[in-house]
Amino acid sequence: MPDDVLVLHDALEKIRVTFGPAAEWHYSPSLVKKVGVGLSLHLKNCGTALRFLQVHIAKCYPGAPITLTGDPRLMERDGKPTTQTTSALILHGESIPVSENESPYITLSRRMASMYQPSMADSIEPDWSSAAFWYEYVAIHGGELLMEGLKRDSLQGDKMVARIYNRYFGVITSYLTEGVKISKSSVPVRDQVVAIDFENILDLYPAIALTCERLRLTLRATGTSRLRFKESNRLRSVRLHEVNNDHRMAMALLAADFPVAESEQSCIAKSYPRFIEIFSHITAESRRSTDGQPTVKANVTTPTITHITPRRGINDDNLGKKHALSKLIHAASTEYVWLHDDDIVMPPACTKELVLEGDLIILPLKMVSEKQDPSLLERLQIAEYAAIQELTMRTAKKKQACMCSGANLIVKRDVWLECESDLHPEIPSGDDMFLLEAAKRRGYKIGVIDEPGFTAVVRPQTTWKAFLLQRMRWAGKAPHYTDRDIRHYGMMIALANIAQLLCPPVLLVKFPVEYSLIRARERAFNLPFSVYNFLVALLLEILYPVYMLVAFFGGLLRTNRW
Image (cartoon, rainbow, N blue to C red; front, side, top):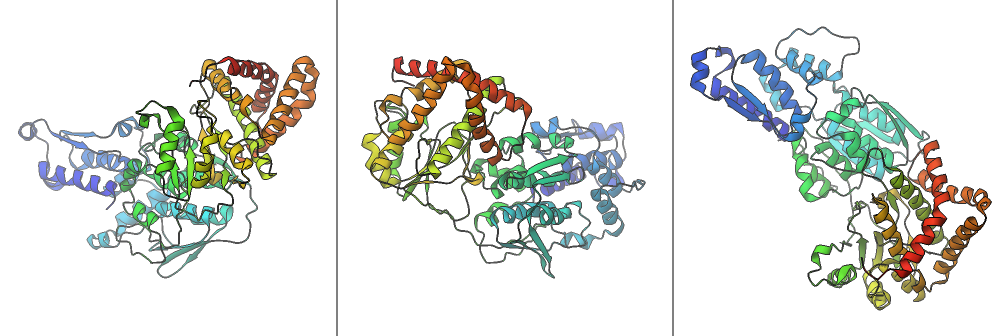
């Protein structure tokens, strides 16, 4: 049973036991005195229960000493009346005039109030908003799913998910006697811009927004102002791929292959207790739902691969990151290891079958600020990182790999162990680039996967000092590189920047080339053109030769320490 239902049921039962049936309640000072301090009801993060109980207490227990509390997020939420408030009034017999653009939720409440019978509790209609995450899953992964109990003629506003996913994402809905079957069409979808008014379908936003991100489509969303007052600020949570104790964010992230820590999955019980069970064990067997949620079936193959993040906390011997990395890889037993840095947002643990063509596979990175409005320094780094990533991907695809990052890298365990002696343990960083060199020198195949589902998110430095120290650390490795491709591209970049310092008009030739790299990577991340970002990229181009030299010579003079 969903937590929302349990919270509301328990609250109603506590009110009834404390104050008696609603029909028998009457306010009197002596009765209130007898009750004492009154009744305090903790509603967790359940906005639905809060709205309903506000009306229920006012209509059925006026004057009763009842206090409604909840999690901090619930207490922060907007106190203005919502469609749930109107629905609660209708269910309590209040006469609410029908408006021209009435919310489907209110229409559904009218119908429920007019036809309610006690036996209806045994035949709760499955929730179309919960079905959205399975639509999201099929849109991204393909395949076919069956959801039992969903109906074409449902009054739920969120049934629009079927029409939206058919038009924009190519997911076909077939209405069967037992429910709804969805499958991915083989016909490509032509729309590159997804334009949706979410005013009456706010619960669909996380699934649709993350589907657009995964399929590299632009989402133009209107009617989203109230998303800031949901279980989390969903506009921010979607942008940063955060759960924030929000059940719909957790499910949407999982369906889109973003990692959700096990400790963050408990909030899903708020509305869909069996989601994790079904998601984790999707098979050809059909499961019958008894809690008002869709039933699903599909086939999934989970890759066997070890994720390794060398957190500094494991370095009880104070031998640094490289030693920590070595201990973890030696302890691994899988064929491949997937390396991550400590400070990244991990890419998805893909539920589709991994096809790893190569002994070392370079994966993409995307720099994203945690701030709604990034600083100029952060914007400069984001532009620079886009150019670096585009060059990384292009050279790898041309079989001339010149860069990679241990923040997101897959390598065969045996290859890493063979190359371990060449990773320069005396240098605090650079295990990734030295690994690339060693693997190429030994003739191992270098692969590349440049897909959204494998993209990790890194954060920019927030101060100039931290930024320059990081760049010095990077530059300090340069004299140790021996690979022809690495030295070739590094020399080209260095000479171009020195030429710009000696002859500033070189900028007119150099900037279009490097900005084309930035725009190519922005398009890969489905980012529209921005004049402001263009100006930031131009400023970066002007400053780059200066700070590159500072970082290079600072890196040569700097001691080998973090």
